[in-house]
Image (cartoon, rainbow, N blue to C red; front, side, top):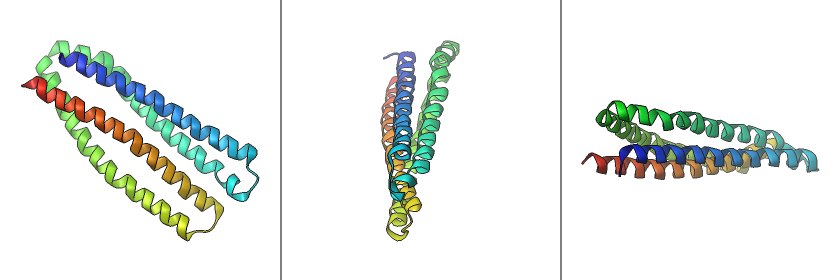
Length: 165
């Protein structure tokens, strides 16, 4: 397979993932609006701010994915045409670094989930419970996002290594 096509397809998949993440952030915003408008209990009203913050964080992740990868689609062609071998080497190194970074993410996110679960168990105020529940939902979604990113990155990295041989 052509390395340029492989790289471009990977970047397009990342851009598509960013759009899906934006939709997920909209669900958090809609949930916050729903709790704000329809919430009758203190617990329901406590979810408004945590859900808004979670929506903003997921939107930031989506923006990061989009703005990091959308320009790459055109930059890949320029870099490949300039020096194909250097391009392949750079992409192989970048994907290897990403794999290491994602391995750390998969250690940190479960720890945050555990901390949020403990918060729910030991704090009885509605706001802190809402924060704990929202944090668990947010970290779960971030693990979903990162697991898909990791799978794409690993496959891309393996294909780059196969192309070099």
